Amino acid sequence: MSWEVHFDHGIWLPQIGWWLDAPKSTPRAIVTHGHSDHIARHREIVCTRPTARFIQERLPGRREFHVLPFGQTEQLTLDCTVTLLPAGHIFGSALVLLEHAVHGTLLYTGDFKLRGGCAAEACAMPRADVLITETTFGLPRYAMPPAPDTERAIVEFCRAALAEGVTPVLFAYALGKSQELLRLLDAAGLPVAMHPHAARFARLYAELGNAMPAHRTLDTQGHRGHVVIAPAGDASLNYIHPKRTAAVTGWALDTHTRYQLGCDAAFPLSDHSDFNELLAFVDGVQPRTVYTVHGFAREFAATLRQRGLDAWALGKGNQLELSL
Image (cartoon, rainbow, N blue to C red; front, side, top):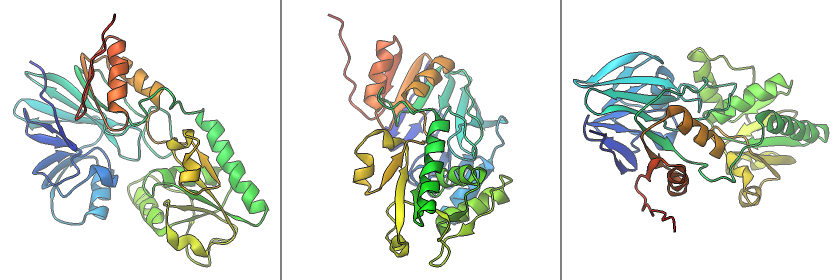
C-alpha cells in the first residue's frame, strides 16, 4: 500500500492523522521551519527547538510542543515513526521522514536548500519511497550562479555605496536571509545596522546557540556608515537618505525583479534549492512516487515524468504527456 496525500494549503496525511506545514490551525501538525507561511496556531506541534522558539515569537500562546533533535526517531502513532533531519533552508529547518509499518517511508522537504550556507545546518538526503518536495524554482531557467560570486557582488555593491557616502540597504527576509547576510558582511569587515525585526531573530539565533556577529539595531540616527539589512517594502526607511537599495532574492534571476521592487540592484542569493538542486535531490532520495508543491509544481512534475518517474503536482491539474 502507498501513502494517501491530500493538499489543502497544508498537506494532510489521513493515514496517520497529522498535517504538514498547514498555514491554518489544526489539532496536530509537523512544522518544518519558522517562516510565517508555514506556521499556525496548532494545538500540538512536532518541530525542532529553533522552530518552536520562532513560532512562539511570532504566535504567542499555549500549545503542546514535541521538540525533536535532528536525527532522533520518535513514535508518532502506533504504526509510524518521525525523524527530523536538516533542510538547509534556515536555522532549525527540517526535512520530515515518516516510516510507517504498512505504507513505507515518506519524506517531506518543506523549504530546503542543498547549497551550503553560513547560518543554517547542511541539508540531509535520506532515501524514501514517497517524496513530497517544494518546487519554488522548478523551471530550468532558475539555475543560481555560484554563491561565492553573488556574495562578492553584494559586498562590492555595499563597499561602493559606502565609499560614496551613500547608505546601502539590502532587502531580505527578517528570519533566515538577514542572518545569512549579517555573517557575510561581518566576514567582509562591513558594519551592519539591522532592522528591529531582523535583529530580534538574530538575538534568538544567539540564544539558541547560533552566535551572530556584532551589529547595531537600526534607528533614525544609526545608519550612517553602515550596511542596512531590512525587510522589503518598509516605508519607514524613508528617513535614510541618500541610499542605494538592493533586493537579495532568488527571484533576481528574473530581470524584471529589481524594477518591480523599485531597487537599484538585485542579487540572486536564495535559501531555496534551484532547478538543478531539485533534480539532484530527487535523484538522491530515489523515490517511487514524487508529489510536488508550491512554485512551479505542475511543470516540475512534468519534468520528472519525462525522466520516467511517477510524479504529480498536489492541488494542480496534471496533464499527461503522450509520445507520438
